[in-house]
Length: 248
Image 1 (spheres, rainbow, N blue to C red):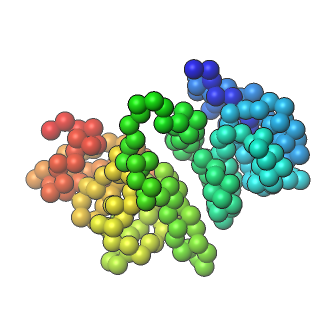
Image 2 (cartoon, one colour):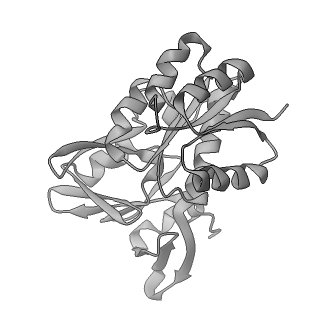
């Protein structure tokens, strides 16, 4: 398969340089151009017709959403928005963006976005078997939570772990925590079973966020995440160890 042709659009030189460096390490992606302004992006995207655009939301002239509106049917098949402002998430998902990245973007989060792009562009394919999330249209790609008087949309892919908090659950996303009025049983049913594992009565972790496990006493394990958070896999949930890559 040829590399996925990509355009990077961001008015911050350092942001473009970081993305360009990361893309250079990805054999399946090729950056064929970059832009710093909305009007320029429209011209370049029409000329190059890339498969993917990493698109800043706020730029001089046209915003990222306005760039897509100007392109119309000429818009790339895959769009990833990148911005420092979380409240633009609604606009991003309304135009069917593959992903929405908040600055500063981590390398791990960048690679997650690329995986989602590859799946979007590949399509189901002949004879493909759908995983738990695509097979069930009720499973959301994002969760809406009330936060500081606003409704915030939290991409499921960004969640490190979920904790129990009385009549609520806590969504831990990097250094941020969002409260959602939901039970642990209910939130388990809303998360992709191939990516999230319940490790105790009070904690669910995203498998890809687990850094390492350490055996404790009485069959329990200490679970450390990429974020530095430390949780405990209880003895009653030892049967979940294989889903974390541990042979028992």
